[in-house]
Amino acid sequence: MPGLEDLYREIILDHYRTPRNRGELAPPAVKAEGHNPLCGDEIQVYIDVADGMVRDVKITGQGCSISQSSASMMSAAVKGKSIDDIRNLVRRFKHMMSIEEEGNDSPIDESQSLGDLEALQGVVKFPVRIKCAVLSWNTLLDALNNA
Amino acid sequence: MSFDAALLKKDFPLLQRIINDKPLVYLDSANTSQKPQQVIDSMSHFMETTYAPINRSAYQLAAESTDAFENARSMCRTFINAPHTNEIIFTKNTTEAINLVAQSWGGANLHAGDVVVLTHMEHHANIVPWHMLVQSHGIQLRWVPLTSDGQLDLTNLDELLKGAKVFSFTAMSNVLGTLTPVKQLCAAAHAAGAIAVVDGCQYVPHNVTDVIAWDADFLTFSSHKMCGPSGIGVLWGREALLNAMPPFLGGGNMIGDVRLDGFTCAELPAKFEAGTPPITEVIGLGAAISYLTAIGMDNIRQHEKETITYALSALNERYGKDITIHGPTDPEVRGTALSFKFKDVHPHDLSQVLDQSNICVRAGHHCAKPLMRLLGANATARASFYLYNSLDDVDALVNALEGAGDLFSL
Ligand SMILES: Cc1ncc(COP(=O)(O)O)c(C=O)c1O
Image (cartoon, rainbow over all chains, first blue to last red; front, side, top):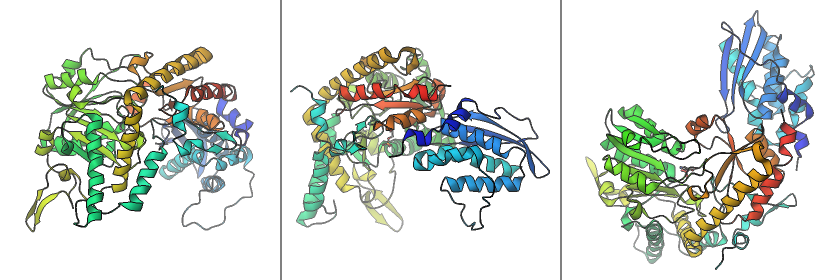
């Protein structure tokens, strides 16, 4: 049986206790909301997009350590990146969570290091928590689609 | 016989499971209960010896199957002290039973502007069916508020009920554990000219139920929360009300006659039982009722009152202000659903930590989002106890909470 230390890596708890990029962005920044109807977790993702880049990102919401730390790491990972790179990163992250995008067989670019996000790998061993980890990522996709 | 939960636990094969070298501590019976061997055996035995269609065929086997099925219906009647056996309607679960009342009774009797009164502690199953009538019929909802210790605040009840057509409320909150004063609420509903719909999903599995003493109009409950199988539930309603209601689902079994230009309904209870029912599950429900009745519902309630009394004091003594237990502090007015907040630990994380000790608790909004908003929480952790939980199970919970706080302290 996987132990708690597989799930709650120190870096995850650090992002949980000290979340990065907390707050809101005023319009014209795009806002998307996500919630996990099973557990009640809620998240709001704000992105400021210009010239095909996400210039700034902010997060609000409440949830468990996994959903909150995943959101925090995500915000740090996407800030200042191009939309193409971000979409690739979302796919890669979801792939790590064993969620594949239907009908997309194109290879995932795994040349970049995942950095802190690597720490969330242990979540796959706790299938009920995968939803927590991907909540912010799906919400980010919604925001990108509306940008 | 003195009540011995540890002994009763032996009746439940699943509770004997050892996972990762540790015994299972199942504290999620408010969600769904485990099944005793007696229920499992009755269902297997029925399928091995008696299973056949009911109400349809002339051969002996079908007659035996129908008899067993109808015998279970009659046990349901006795269990809740209903006046007539044909008032027991088999549904899928409580959710379907409340939808039946809302759609059939409500659909026929409620019009734009009519008022339905609910309470702030209802399960979504007793909210959404009425919201649907807001959308389709333009009815209005009013809400009975709560006191700070999670009981119904009845100060303005008569005012809230004025002109209302329906008062639908739970007999026990699945989040707060609160037992509501059902008899008083039924009387208040009737004084205002409203019908009283009682959601007994949490109450019926744990207490003596008497719809005549309550003077209720409808009662709903689910087999899976009372040691029976899932897939079967009960709606009880007064015969006169059920007779006057239009059918809910149409199809086989519920008809008197069908012609090219229309149909007539069967008599009760068939009128509300369209299609082939979960036959074996009904047999299982009957076996669950036998099992519970042999132990005695008053004994079960007494045991649970002792369990919750012990749990409240053990948790409060050990953790003081690190733990906030929602709901009433007086065990007289609460059942065994125990929702709590522990330090700053998110319920999801808490249940993950408890899972390391094989302690099963629910983390989430418990299908009661309006209540969660009132509590100011997105989610709570909930432990719930049943006849098979001994004080050792409470101790296991109390002890396992220990490390959780440190791991997640903000
Ligand atoms: C108070 C209450 N009402 C209704 C329900 C719905 O029951 P079911 O899911 O069996 O339909 C529940 C189940 O949790 C409940 O606790």
